[in-house]
Image (cartoon, rainbow, N blue to C red; front, side):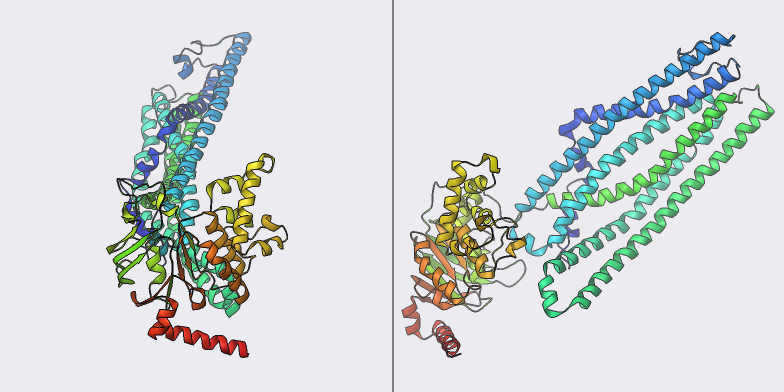
Length: 640
């Protein structure tokens, strides 16, 4: 269930398995490049461990000429014994330089390969995950969108998926760094001095256990932070979309306070988590500092009191030891940060895979009915429907509509007219009864084949940011593809598509005003069509529906936002628009539906009257009362 702000915390319950394991499953198509990238990453880390060994050999064998064999000698890369003579020492130094050069060459090549392969794989996983999440989101039922805010959806598609990409891109390499560096240094230190190696490695399990406790502690706090930022995003999205209302009612102070309060809540939670996180990292640094001082003392005492003993290090080994100590604790301290990043990524993964685990309420049946075409006969058979646990909005409605007929629906706001018609394209499924098209229950149709034959023009039509032509072309897939083609690729197919767009616009009484726009059909209309008037948006939406050439058309108060002159022009063409099609017209202005084949009057979810305009006036019921009330309003307006 969504929270009271329309957030997405409830979708966590839909996660199947561990969210981070689910994330790894998206990497399987790229296993080869990841495998090579991981090998290259290990080579990079191992190559970084060579220079201190070379420094130790140079100090012992070149500078001090002590004859200490060292690890490179044990590996067969350097000759044993004391180096005598200037020429021999120069040759020895040159060999060290060659080994160092090869190590840096390997490191550079491996670093490029590992970063390119791992980072590009992270980008591919991000792309696949975002595409699948978006596609899944689009296929969810309308009830899901009614219960969840757009800001929360955008947060998942952008912030959460980007955080997962960042984790794969950065923290995965850090994990390799920890394993390779700590493992390699542990072996080298143990080779130099088992006693000192044990002291140096003592913090490793402590840091591991502490990181585990830190993860447990920080998880609920970051979950709370994600909830807070989701609510903040939702508030910001609502206020930006509702800017005209805020301005009209001068509610700047009110909305600023709401944003400020939620922003302060986010600040307080973030700072509280930051305080503990910084204290955790400071504790890690203190622990590693103590070990560094302890090793300095123990190694120094061995070197001073027993320079020739088995526990004493050579000068070169002593130097290398501390170089490795410095490198050992850097990735270990990074474990805490990686734990922090892991928890953030896990929180995001829970939301992403929780959303992917959300099942749509309306789905295709197993054996879909896929007719080549439909005639448009629509039947409502004792239909009852309510939203979730709410009382039914539609109650026991039965209505037969022959194909090609025009049915007008009238009634007060909230009577259930729009909800009833949303059951035809299966935006929702009935609670009881059945809705049939051509005698077949709509639940037996494939959703795409059913909805491709139904066009809807709503009271507040949604237009996409783009050109007028693109929004009209949205009604037909082929026309839309042609309209989206590059300028250089446009040919006869584009011209044909543009002609169809113009024909639809003319039928919807939109062509004239479109031609008067600055760039005609290529005019950018802004977000949600904000640059057009309400009536203009309605006519563009009608043109879009007509281009779809459906067998069933639903007009949901499509002329409510147009002036009387425009309404008359649209009304003149409605008979042509609905010719040979089944049409449902919901109208506040009864003059829009007075010529319908049948008029249905609804109240409180039920049909209370049905018949022609003349019959309903003669019955002197609810319809007649509405008609006479609107007639009086028209008379008053005319007198004014």
